[in-house]
Length: 296
Image (cartoon, rainbow, N blue to C red; front, side, top):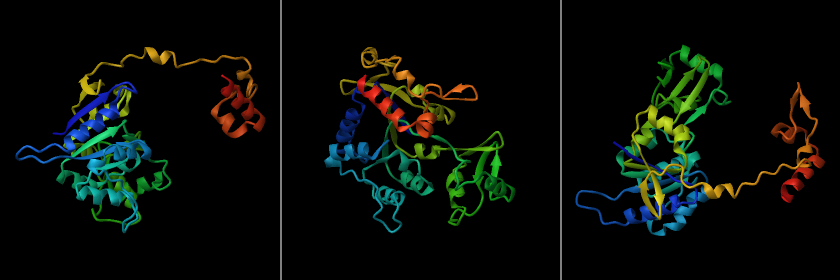
């Protein structure tokens, strides 16, 4: 069973620094008899954050997936690196594309996943132009897809690579849910999480995330811990947020609130709304708004 640790600590308490030191110590340790050293996959929200790991741990030779391969695909590069057992740093976006080939490689190896911030484990996909809603009904009607207890499964050839490949790619793990008989929700393949030797999730307020409920739904057990002075300690809750108050300034100037005044539609006030600023605001209004923000 995969050991999952959720490192839940306030920003700035040293979660990433702890992870770097943890990988350094485990990556160069002398393995005990009958054991092998793990390889690491560090997954960050953005590429710059992933590169930070590569720079901080030159001795572990972290590699980034790239497009320098026959398929010109970062996903293909990820598979090549996994097959070679390399330490890998990458982004949430690429990790969310993990498929059955990635799963097969992970199951053969001894990887530790360090997930910097929770990922989007659920996505509404029926609005995707590549996966039109009408096509779902046709594929279900003809048995290419099947549905059981609202979960949709790919029923056609496992090696299929034609025009319907994106449906196969989404449904291969039986991880698309039909909601209210009309919407389709993709969920991250739980088998991917189960294929790691260990998982560390670095985050804050995990209880408020979808990934928490994803773990609970799939009965993935995890331990909550926090970071203090560079070490993991029992979970301390939301932590000391007293200093955050001093960093927040509420500006309630009448002049600022005049920007966009009087813009209404169907009786609803759209003053200074996202829609107003994006579609209706004049150059003068935008300049006035900018000046007010910079002057606070």
